[in-house]
Length: 93
Image 1 (cartoon, rainbow, N blue to C red):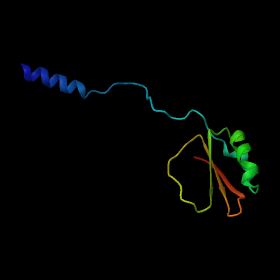
Image 2 (image 1 turned 30 degrees about the vertical axis):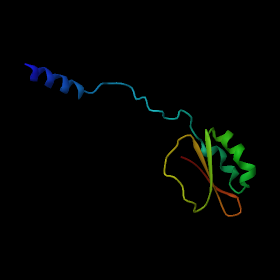
Image 3 (image 1 turned 90 degrees about the horizontal axis):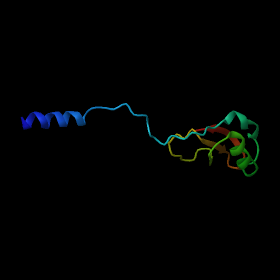
Image 4 (image 1 turned 120 degrees about the vertical axis):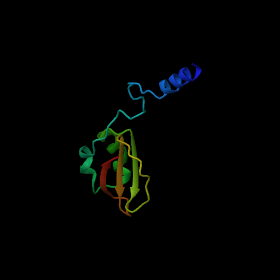
C-alpha cells in the first residue's frame, strides 16, 4: 500500500501544468528601418538620436569585424561602424 501511495506521489510530481510563461522577455521593440538615414553619419552624432527614433531600450555600437556576443535582444539597436567611426549598418537584435 505504501508503495502505491509513493508511486502516485512521484508520478504527480512529473505532471505538467498549463501556466503562462513567466520569462523576462523584453516588451519593447526596435525599428531599425526608422533610422536607416543615419548610415554615413558619424557615430557620435547618431547614437542618441538612433536609440530614441528606433524605440530601442539599448544600443550596441561596434566596429566592423569586432567580436560580439551572440545573444539576441529584440529591444537592442546595433550600430556598426567603420574604422573612422562612420555608421555603415543599423540593425536590431
